[in-house]
Image (cartoon, rainbow, N blue to C red; front, side, top):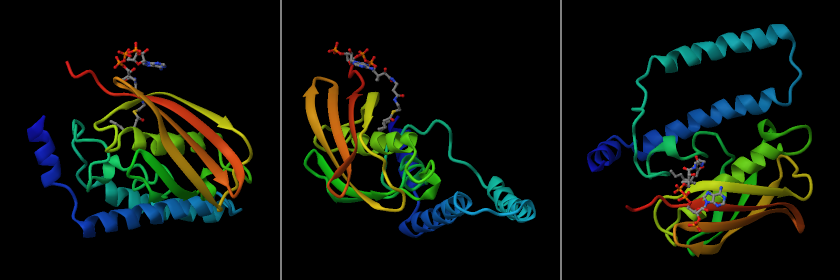
Length: 203
Ligand SMILES: CCCCCCCC(=O)SCCNC(=O)CCNC(=O)[C@H](O)C(C)(C)COP(=O)(O)OP(=O)(O)OC[C@H]1O[C@@H](n2cnc3c(N)ncnc32)[C@H](O)[C@@H]1OP(=O)(O)O
């Protein structure tokens, strides 16, 4: 196990490579964001597909990460374990987050939308990531997995608007970490989340 972690850390990307990786992912998600809002004709879309297929072919020729990497989740330098850097969740600006609480801002771009508002599943994805950060943070210590996640959607979440998020530890009971969170648009509550993260047995 330790050998595998060392191997992963040794091959972790440099800051420059990580920035380049992030820029490439950002370019890809900007395409998805444009495709979510435009009304192109079929000919334009076919040209678009051809150009994107060339990029895809170039990426397919590159080596992939080993399948059995068991490095800690969100390991620094490993973009594979950082959902925001992979474009899976929107980038999340953390304003405070070192004492078992997390306060931050997030903006959902058009690809996360249904019609004019954020898709419920995208909100759930976001909460799993944000609550997971606190559940796996320095206060609780160590890795824990989501056992359940409940979302209450209180009002429509607008797209392309900054939303404010707060996440906190509700209780810790042995291996169980109960985490709660809320997302607001200004003073208006958009959604609330509660979840349980369970740390693995030590023996
Ligand atoms: C790698 C880390 C990633 C960082 C954060 C990202 C989190 C993720 O998204 S992980 C992906 C989504 N989650 C998963 O895939 C998890 C799949 N499930 C599992 O692996 C297991 O069911 C797991 C780990 C949650 C619990 O399994 P296990 O350790 O065997 O728990 P178990 O011994 O049965 O139960 C422990 C306690 O939790 C409680 N519990 C477990 N699951 C639940 C649940 N769904 N609801 C309520 N209570 C539960 C049990 O009742 C028990 O309570 P008590 O100790 O009071 O009797």
